[in-house]
Image 1 (cartoon, rainbow, N blue to C red):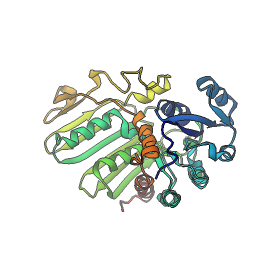
Image 2: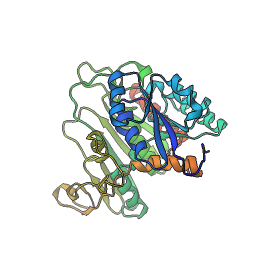
Image 3: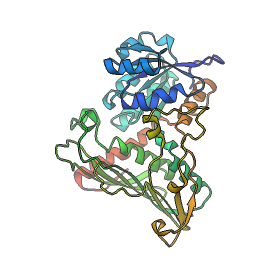
Image 4: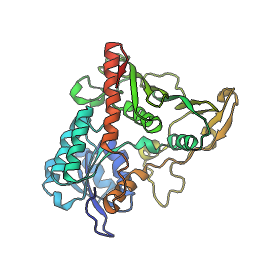
Length: 363
């Protein structure tokens, strides 16, 4: 599935939304990708429009998605980075306008909707890709390398934590109790930890979850645990929380030969928030200091010096859009398919059902 293939001509990208996802992640990464050109940003917010003008003076502005789709023939790719509830209708509109689409996670509120979108893209012969940037986190890339090299042996248990200490509510649609907003940590950070687990250890067979609303005034889940039994036999214990006063390791992976423990978050989001940009002039992009490297070993806690330090590979968010560009111009593989995202949504829906009913859910 490809888009326009004019050699040497950058693909013109329309970006819908300029909040956190659009301004911090998508716009900078698109602008840094060879073969892509940020053409238009859709936002009606006056402050965000001024922000676009300051950061990308040559980019056109549109007030509504309809305004963007009216000139679909002037674009080669649409990126949907607007609130979660708009993902399905906007992706549908883009595909029907004949445009390949990248959609921020979660691609939809249900696995059924994700599969319907995938079918529409297939029918139209268009790329539909899901932005799961955490597949290019430094720790995740390092863990994949360790697994490929067999350093841990047969993995028994995978623990993954995306924890924060945010005792005060920030407000906004992500913390809304309205189910149509598709907010809450289960679908926000849960989308990341579930996707990573499925990529590493394969399909889920059974899901058990605990999901709580901890903070005063909160209206949606802010402290969630998901246990996934994979068809491979691996058990994943996944945590997404805004109420963790003492943060645990990002990864703790236990195998028949050794374990891998890694603390701290990939540095790329913080760098993007600070205004740093990947590119040829940024030789240290995605690197972290040696004192943050994880440790591989057996028999002693890494906190008391057990194991050996494992150099963390550089994080590489730019690789996602580079892969999208190759998919559209050279017929390369889709870096994250909607069907992969649908499989993660199967787990998230099962987790929601499990937490509500207090039962394990078989898939």
